[in-house]
Length: 470
Image 1 (cartoon, helix red, strand yellow):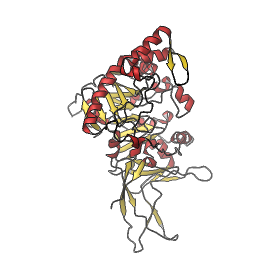
Image 2 (cartoon, helix red, strand yellow):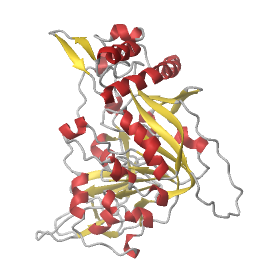
Image 3 (spheres, one colour):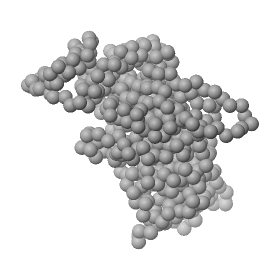
Image 4 (tube, one colour):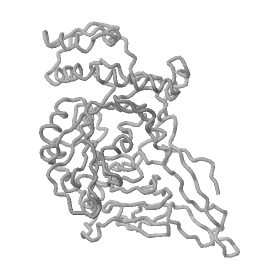
């Protein structure tokens, strides 16, 4: 269970525990020494992408590039189960990213309202720093954000405070004075040596498959051979009860059991439509356009028009619950409510907030910071007007999601690694419903995930190998 505490205000989640309760066990052959002359057999532990010297496609075999030598008496060398766990240091967020100094006074009182009032009267406020005093002129977007913050401030503060107190009582969170010095060392992140989005661009040069060829590819227990083209143009499904390791351009990724994914960009989403599934819940984390993304070139973004063209109506089952992550920019919030959802025939039902805290229960950013906030929004809605097909099973009525809930959790150090929503949404979707995440960067058992970086946080460098068992 990822839910540590549930109150009327919302949920306290343990994202780290959720990941490590996934059965990350990979069956691998014992690696015994063998001579150069011995024949080898390749196991179906992963998919390996390769190209020939001329640049043409080479076969992609379901293998971990681990050879399986035969024993000299002709018998099988046997296998062992390798267990993996997500790195705990990636969730060791002990200190706030920015310590409140300038805004400490305002944070304790009504700093958010004061900032808005001052900006509304003079359209500029003085921010005092250590070196000099500077006058800041706020644009309309920033003024809108301040007004919105004032409106939801008490909901964020009261709801998260209740959950944080329960987390401290239970020992899930710890007091400020305890263990804080352990978080002083910087977290070493692996290099992003394999650009998944870049590979998706390269895959567009491959000849297109027929509609029949785009059907879902199931990875089975036995050995299999898969063409390179399939990985970028078909939904890949791991129906095994074990995880699988795949290798892509020399980089290894872990696939959870009972998970499905499509690695592609928005121009190659058709295989998802061809997989034969209609989804009862769709979670969307769009790459919103903003100034910092433009400056950093960290990832590609989509315009509102491009986001609107995502084929949600074709993917959604009747009464599908749609959840969209939004930034704190009001134009994105208004776009989802006023344009995006109506164009998809989705009725807006609720607005929730994810509140990011440290392991000591502090906000990761000052609540009243004029720049970054310690929360992000989610807009929840339900598809309307789709006819429900006749069924022998009685129709299950699920309640609408309530408005104004908060989800509180310690964030991952990896950028944009959102908390899992499966357990907090289960009361608002029918049992056994099909679940889809769009613009995903990780995989979950029981979910289909799509995006041009869908395997990003499944990279083996984010995991540690535990002691192998037989």
